[in-house]
Amino acid sequence: MTTAWADFETAERDFAGIVRTRFAGYRHHVLATVRADGAPRLSGLEVDFRFGELWLGMMGGSRKAADLRRDPRFAVHANPGPGDGMDGGDARIAGRAFEVNDPALVARYAAETEPPEPFHLFRTAVEEVVRTTVEGDELVVSFWRPGHGLRTVRRR
Image (cartoon, rainbow, N blue to C red; front, side):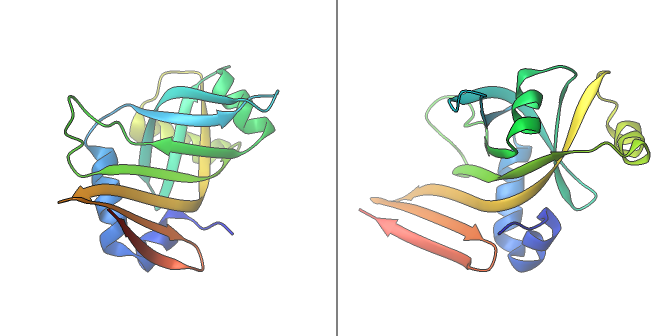
């Protein structure tokens, strides 16, 4: 089951805000895609929250774009930042990404973001959002999935 980012924000406004803030802390993040041979591929990527959606934009002809065209499954991990800190915890979003081919939507997006040309634009459908933090001596994992709501697990 998947959902749009806006629907996730409506369902879990506070949690969505924490995760979005974590991604906004840095420009570059890590995208995981599936290669043609089934192996994982990790690539640098900028994410964008706009028009109620989570967008993935990438350079024209990139391998990660080819991966997503073939297999839309992805996970994007927020940049942990410098040193050991990870202020705000560790955040990850997983789902499916679908290339946008509507010229009007691509033009609207490009007018607001001014990406390097040419570029691929993918709209995402969210399947899971996870935030991991350490509180005292506990590892705290909060995760949300469509239809299941927000759950938190604490481990010592």
